[in-house]
Amino acid sequence: MTSDERPARLTVGVVGAGRVGSVLGAALARAGHHVVAVSAVSEASLARAAELLPDAPVLPPDEVVRRAELVVLAVPDDALADLVAGLAATQAWRPGQLVVHTSGRHGLEVFAPAGQAVLGMALHPAMTFTGTALDLDRLVDCCFGITAPEPLRAVAEALVVEVGSEPVWIDEAARPMYHAALAHGANHLVTLVSQALQALRAAGVDSPDRMLGPLVEAALDNTLRRGDAALTGPVARGDAGTVAEHLRQLRTLTPDVRPTYVALARATAERALASGRLRPHAAEPLLEILARDEERP
Image 1 (cartoon, helix red, strand yellow):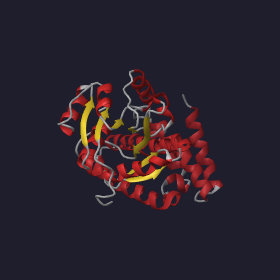
Image 2 (cartoon, rainbow, N blue to C red):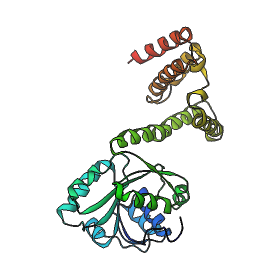
Image 3 (spheres, rainbow, N blue to C red):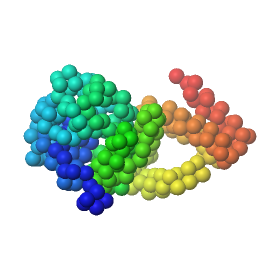
Image 4 (cartoon, rainbow, N blue to C red):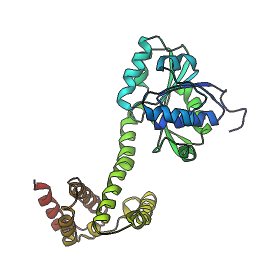
């Protein structure tokens, strides 16, 4: 994008200096926009605002909105609708104001309480955030799931490109499925890897991250390239005895670990069956073991 193609420099207000809002505000500032105000309540959000948006005064949400040409709403999904409605009730919105929310679940319907006053867009970064300056580099080359009215599509895409990311169009009706996919793939991965680290510590491994890291990275890379064809391990081979021993060992860990293993082993077996990697005769004893474990209190 050349300087002539970039959108005009905008005054930006950030409502919610959480991990996402503070970083996106800083990224927009780095792209040349002027962050004029931010809202923050908790000690953590106040600290993030001070670190990443040091020149922006901390103000109540309605005052942030009144000062900005572009408003970034970076609040939890379940709080977004009430926030939009509350700002409408206080007549904070200005006609023609650009408003972006960062929710993965919601599209444009959440702007309904604001009526025709705002030009709403959904820009969701497909990235996990720490809420520190490290995230600014992570934004480069990540994707944003965008939904916008057709006349605003170019504006939404330009804002994403400006922070170094790639815009990916998501239809309004598809946003809940899109968000479920990302949450399942990323948030649940954190739980899975944390459980594996716990099991390695229980096995006496002093540096479980050093042992597990290369394996998980290779598995992820292979899966992104090959999908189900990347599957290896005892479930794919139908090694029912090995899986049964795993279940016996996992009973000594916290009670969340074994049910997670069982659920994922069953899902893995079903996908391996569907892809032909696991034969029905090998799957039967494996699935019986998993079913018996699920029935235990």
